Image (cartoon, rainbow, N blue to C red; front, side):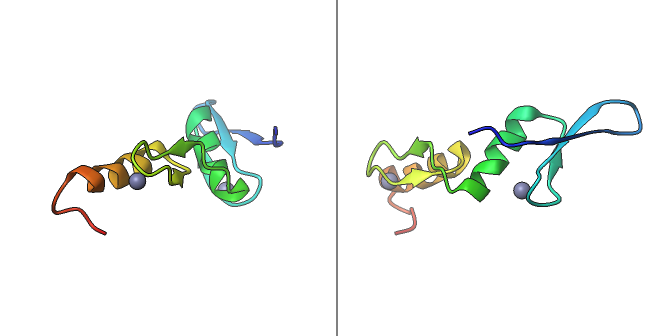
Length: 74
Ligand SMILES: [Zn+2]
Ligand SMILES: [Zn+2]
């Protein structure tokens, strides 16, 4: 699903993509796409250990490490 992103220009003429659903904006398209998942509820990154799904890869990795670390949260 493609959403209509607002494309603005910053002072130096670089494109800034703004989320249409909140004030978040980023120069990087990929960053904004990751951010948009927080609105759509899509979770493309499953934990390889338990299958729990996460919106952000970094969050999934932080979670996944709790399966292998004895000091991990649970
Ligand atoms: Zn947003
Ligand atoms: Zn897990």
